[in-house]
Image (cartoon, rainbow, N blue to C red; front, side, top):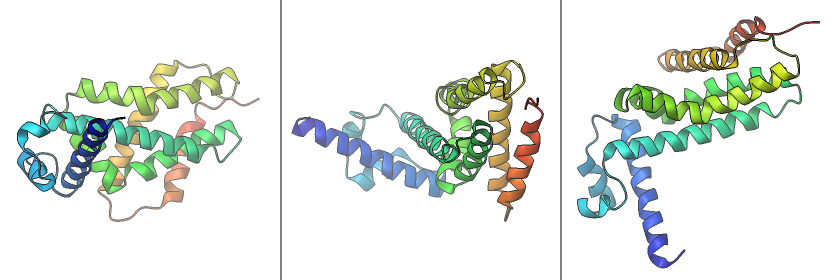
Length: 194
């Protein structure tokens, strides 16, 4: 990269960092574009060189968070060599990471309410759901889970984990062992024995 490209990359990252901090602290709707550009020391014209609008910043942050979350889930799940346990561990890891204040506010609360549902769902499908579907296909091919419609199963599990994360984010306390037990019991219904 040349100097201009490096400077542009650094400015874009500053915009994302400042916007993320403000969206987490105040929420998307309570953060003005003016606040973001003033904190960085940009003019609006310079800002528009990097993003079209505030919604585009949110969309980029969601994409980044989804990738980080998916990587975290995959890395955590790979601590086991047992594919069934990888599914359980991955689901629990998703919930643990998704309820983090830096994740939940942007990804599961502001994201679906600001972007269209279709756009948010498309992004979720391309990131988190695609990796879950991949593991479920492997589990089915290896005879670990019953023959089921993988797209339906993926949506069911992903939607349930998203809802669980939202519910837990509003709780004062929770027991991660109880969460794991609940996830395990729910998923036992698809497990194939014998």
